[in-house]
Image (cartoon, rainbow, N blue to C red; front, side, top):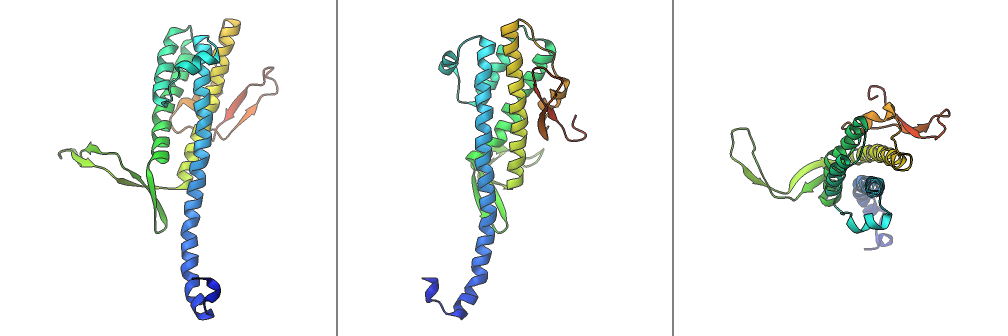
Length: 229
C-alpha cells in the first residue's frame, strides 16, 4: 500500500508503529556495524600471526604461505611450539606465549561466536543464538543434558570492547614480530619494554599507542587505563 493513498487519520495511526519499528532497527544497525568492524580488526590480527612465522622460521613469505593454517587456534599452537625452537629470552618467551594464549582463548572463542552464531532482535534487545549441540550439567549433582540453540544477550558495546581487546593484542604481536626480526638480523633480542607487559593479560585494553621522542627507533608503546599498568 502506498503511503500517499492513506488518509491523514490512517497515517496518524500508522506513525507510532513505524516509529517503533525504526527504533528497533537502530539497534540492529549499530550491532551490524560493530560486527563488521570486528571482522576488519580481526583481519589485522590474522595478518600479524602469519607474519611472525617468517622471523621465527627464518624463511621467506612464500614458504610461510605454503604451510600456514587458516585456523587461528592451530596457528597459535604452532607458534607456541616454535618458540621452543629458537634462542628467545625467558621474559620474551613468557610474554609472547601469553599473547598467543590470549589470542586463541579469550579473543578467538568470543570472536567466532559473534561472527558465526545466529542473532535475532527481540523487543529492545539483541540475542545471539549458539546452535552448537553440547552436553552440559545444569547443576553440580545433575546428569548431563543436551543443550543447543542457547540464547545469549548481546550488545554493540560488547562487540566494540572485543575490538579494543583485539587492537591491543594485534599491536603487541607486531612489537613481538619486530623484536624477533631484530634478533634474526642483529643476533640478539632488544630489551622487552615493560610497558607492553599488560597486553598478555586477559581483558587488558590499551587506550592508545604513542611514541617516545627519546627512542631513536620510535617504537610505539601502549598507554593503559589507570589500574591496568
